[in-house]
Length: 633
Ligand code: SER
Image 1 (cartoon, rainbow, N blue to C red):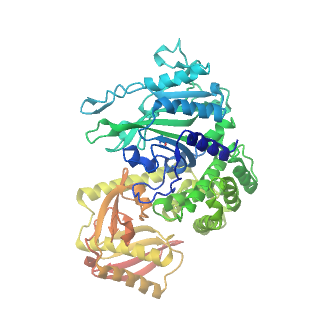
Image 2 (cartoon, rainbow, N blue to C red):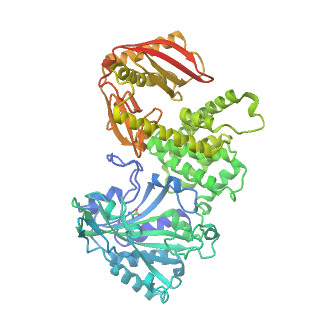
Image 3 (cartoon, rainbow, N blue to C red):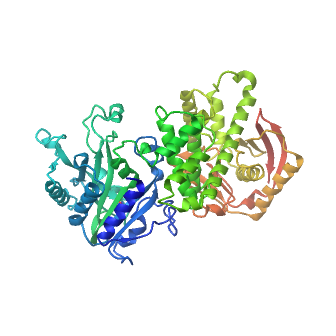
């Protein structure tokens, strides 16, 4: 049974039961600025789950392409992927647990022929401590006894075991004989934002019942797992059990006062990952060994000349990330430093890091195998193949350029010293990190080794310094707080941006020092600037001063700042948030900004206050770095 067959069976099964098939919504939602990607089948249906009438009726079915950026770091194990297809059926105030549970059971055991002894059920255990606000309780958050009784009925009909696991009576009803497992809000409650206390006002959610597939107690993965000494149970995370189906009984809406209110009509929101269902039908614990992914892994093996065994993590990351990149590119996204483009860039670069670690060179054959594998369910990726391939390869080319520059820096610095060894100093690895933006893993994928402990210490030092600096700045501002230095600070932001516009975004500030006499600015650049270039730089900065752009800061989540393309030495990060200076736009309109920088400040309020900018001289600052002195005012 292929992935295509599962989709076909599922849609037909629910169409026969009067469900209307609705389209697969775009992977990048239109008209929804609150989210970057469609991450569940229910996302486009929220207004209808809240009570609006759907034009196609009250029973719907589809297969939805989804991308979950939060799972990027999870990829590498036997079951996580960032991109997947979700089979979904919905009751919009129509049927409830009474029909959803028997249909789900029939689909899994009759249509997909999954053996009953391999299936385990979880239900909502209730939450006795569901104090939502000021002692107010949600008394309705009790054990989902209805779901249990519908499951028992189904299991009884086929003569299967239906014992409910009860921790307190472990001796008589132990883990080995139990079939139905109740869990709390962390496992058997579903909303887009997680458990009830995390849901924002207005958000719908509800208890869920899930089905897990058991790959068996003797599974090798389990032996290696950190849970190997614990008793295994469906949600134990060791890899033995994999969740294949999730029915959410979406009947609540979070209120402003923190409580949960019943929606006018209860809904069913079912989601089942196609890749996971395939894994169960093939009784294959490794999703990357299923008939869907195996040919993609083959292409990676061929390109790298390595076996899958021993290189599973890298190969899984490459296969998943290139699949996701293919679908995101298909949604007309281009790699960039903001929003969806930033995620796409991260996926492509991360897959290349892993490909290079395995000594592979080209990603072309992997992209081609992804298109081959998915074209039957998603024919448009074949139509757009050339565009998809060119976009990914162009980014690979760019990334190659950045990596070459980092290598050049090392080659220049070490000359012949590096012959026969690949060990560089942690300090140089740190310079590569700050000037080229390459992470320790990316530096390692260049073939260098360095003392990672020392690198981590250097990183901590850098962060501590920035915190200390921040403390000083918050206590009394900069050492010299005169108008002249404040003007100088704003001038460095203008100069930094102008230099990047002139010479490309591999150019980064590496330091600065501002007094009331002059501005000193250091950056990575491997030659002297010509007189014409210095004149042009002066002119750009003076033009921006004349335009009198507004300057202001906002404290925003550091991740978001990176997504917006904020530059700088990242010295002004305070915990989760960073102080970001905008020249021009703001965080709502980052594209309107001339410059977005991490910085403690202070700055002038309008660029016009800087009055004028004059370069005094330039210096070479060791290999690959330059220094410019300028005057303002
Ligand atoms: N919304 C639930 C999920 O995404 C079920 O469809 O898992």
